[in-house]
Image (cartoon, rainbow, N blue to C red; front, side, top):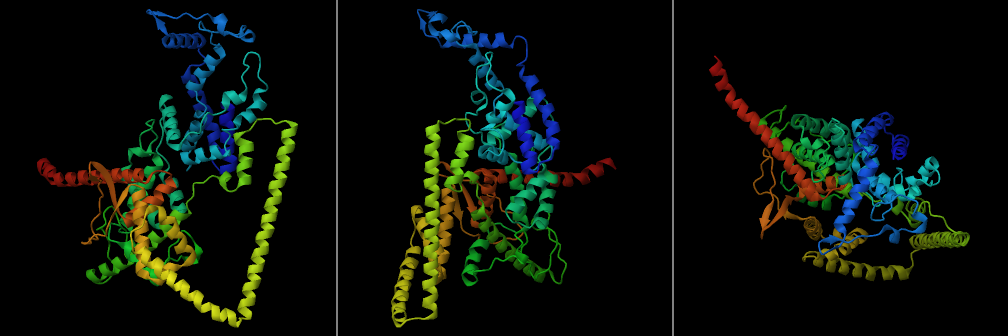
Length: 572
């Protein structure tokens, strides 16, 4: 296990740019963890044997109030008679192995690797550790292959193979991994800092292609002002993960800065998309930089949406200009988040193609399994057939593509009378098809037909025929997506207030709690949830919890300020 942890730390440093400081920290944590397990105590062997006998006695069938006696000689094979056994004939080596596997599980190596990254203030998340371990980039699933070099062949004292000893039974999830790291730190008495909020927030903002210089400073102020307890590792597996808390702070910051409080900005942008397809552009092709508006900066936004610093002429005129600038920036932001949501992918590298998957299975899943000579020849023949088919498919694709381009060029250069005469019927049939699909988009859709309409919309461009039907289709698609994730669509607010922060509550319908949200808030929520690899409802609950904490802090400050004059009067 110690060698496995060392290999994992070396891979983190060499392949993922983690600070080499973790290699010096991991030794102390590992030794304290082993010392706490007490597996090296003198009476540990007898204690485990006694516990196994007690468990076997409890599971033995009782007859007439007396436990059924078992004779070890009837259940022990001849080649195992020289090994130690308990009184029920169970081999002691398996009893010790099961106890060690329970006391120091194999996944604790990943938990310790994540823990040292947390102590070193690295922006490494449990989702990263789990993904890299599952893909084989961290020595975990197939680490026993490397351990053979250190342990050698099994000895007579321990005739168990390294594959049997250190092969994980299942892959650990990110939620369980973080709880395991918190449990290890709690058991060994390690006082941990909070997560590196700045590094993780910057990383998430870059992956969402958000403007760091505008969002991160305000997010850090909210973090320093509130400092939620959810930013510390915990052994409670039911608690919301730390990365979700970081993302909830970013969501609240975005809502405050861009005035996203159910005013229907996304619904208004649907009309803009119909009139201007390229309404969301970026400057200098920089994904993290929004297009600069001609309206000047109107100051900073603090903890409340109504605290603006106006720096120009009359208040009413500046307020109108600010609302327009905020609405323009909000439309750009929502467009960026919609694009980021489609681009975010949690697929593993081995799922790119069949060849990558087969190589992954050979090197990771079935590592250490030897094959016979005949099997090697058969595998080589199958690979040759597969490679030959791949080359033939590429040649056929290139051939058809060449013929298609050649025919298109000839048609463009020398149009014939037949093509001219046959062009009109095709256009007429296409327009009639557009009208049919446009009428069908106005009717309610079933969720199973969403992919079909998506294909027609993306490949044929049929939504350009009617802006009303396209807007209705997009809105219906959003409602279906919200229903699939357990949310109910709320129409835009009729009484728009730019100085009020909208707090969402769960709605009880037929005895069930339903999550309700506006489309503009839901767009932010689902993109952040997909990046953090959690359910959208979990992300929403984390946002609600953080908002309640901010409201409680504001209430305490307000009550303290009100009681301040009375205290000063009493003192005087």
